[in-house]
Length: 256
Ligand code: 13P
Image 1: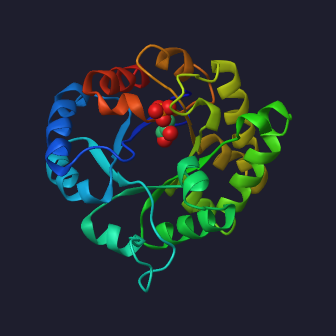
Image 2: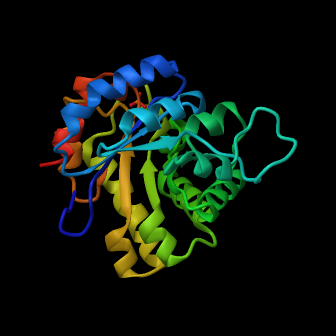
């Protein structure tokens, strides 16, 4: 983290976990543990849990996000939820491009772009996920993959939107839910490359201000080392975000 230039952001991605009642209970447990955080704290929860999360976080420093949104405002898209619907509920953030959406639900670079655009157009802040598969890392094309995912997602995003409303999360797919964390150096190398790309697409000021998280088996034990890297501005946390003490420990590491 470089706290002179950027605010650290720790976001939980609960994935397909927790009922509304469990959401209230977990947030009530997290709240006092992160009350004095010197970083942004976000919980991204299933659609069905958003109302409970918004209610439970009222008056606290925890922000609420959704895990996806559709690109259209409304229409015949059974099972989907749109960005204006999320905004109307009071949701502030949304994740786009998570590798699980890309792998299991057919998301492509183009649909990730479209979802990101719809979210921005409706005043939401977006955590855009990018990252390579293991075979791609082994083939030596990590940078090409991550650059192209990022570039397509950000097409048409203004400098102002980039600075104020976009967080990029680098999540190597092979590190997600596997317990295999990227080394701090691997994480920083790709995060730095993403920042350089933002510099190419915008300018040096935007690159300095861009928040680039790392995600993939980040936990209480490895957060310090990952967050000590200059280009790792926070984390997108899966499994460890479902346990209040673990999530709070990561928030604490980002608050140093
Ligand atoms: P894990 O922290 O469970 O590896 O998940 C990371 C992730 O996918 C966050 O979006």
